[in-house]
Amino acid sequence: MTRNAVRRAIAWIVALAAAQLLVNGTAIAQPVDDLERDDSLVLSIAWRLQTANAAYCARTTTATGIQLQDTAVFADPAAARAAYGLSGDIFIGALALTGPGTAAGLTVNTTVAAIDGKPLAAIPAPSPRTPFARLARVQAMLDDASARDGAVILTTGDGRVIPVSAIPACHVTVEVDDGRNYARSVRDEIWIGRRHIAETGGDHDLLAAMIAHEMAHAVLDHQAILIAGHGSTAVALHTEHEADRLSVWLLANAGFPPEAAINYQRTVMARHQGFLAIDPTHGNWRERARIIADERAALMAAPDGDWAHHFRRETE
Image (cartoon, rainbow, N blue to C red; front, side):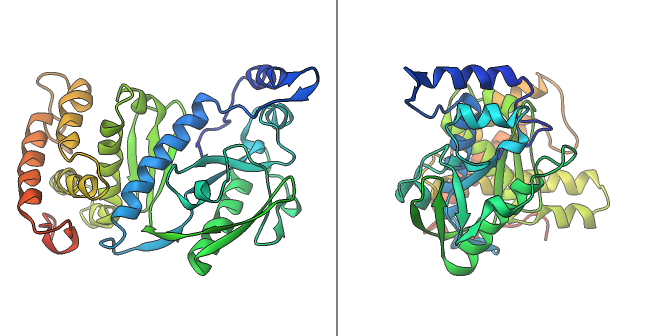
């Protein structure tokens, strides 16, 4: 679910997409736009990292790999409904490629009419001041049911009743932030700016390294450590180095090359810092690349990917 004041600031773009849906008055397809593709790409990579490392995370859940969306966050909800072929306001905005939602036959832009038999149309539309309020509520309904029951039943706009299983995953949510140029985490929530995604140049391994770094902050509960450190630069630097190091374990367990974390420093972070600049809370990208390379060697020497037992904490 993309976080922005309004998901589409220019409503006529959505209306144009709606016009392209019609051939001789018949709807022929539900378009998937570039923003939805980014949503599903980030969700798919995060899903691999979350599920492959679930056995080692202290906080886990059972999840479906489904992100919902709400037409209320669009500049023109009616145009969005027409463009995406929707029969209601709540729909599937992103799916993890290898997740249970995809396996159940769901697709992006499928209208969701009910969750576990509870009609979503009964939930009031949000106010213009809080366009994401209803979306947060229905996503919580889906996620809570999945965590509680290990499955959820979705009723689609065309009346299909589709049971979706849930599988163990690290308790982390990852969202795309439209138009921003950062990657950050707070507790169990991670935001990846779309302009930051663009800096990976379409390299999915680099994007996985970016997400793995932020996920490392979340699973190691670095927010609590930073709060306890009262803004200490030294503490912040330790958490960054620790996230750099754990990212190679997260990547390897999910089938991504751990050296992608090194390449991420040499490409994306090097461009951010320039040749000589040093961020006191993050350190120089060359030093970070060296630390990651050392951790990769430690990973290769370990008997398994069980970082809960083999990873050496820096902040303890």
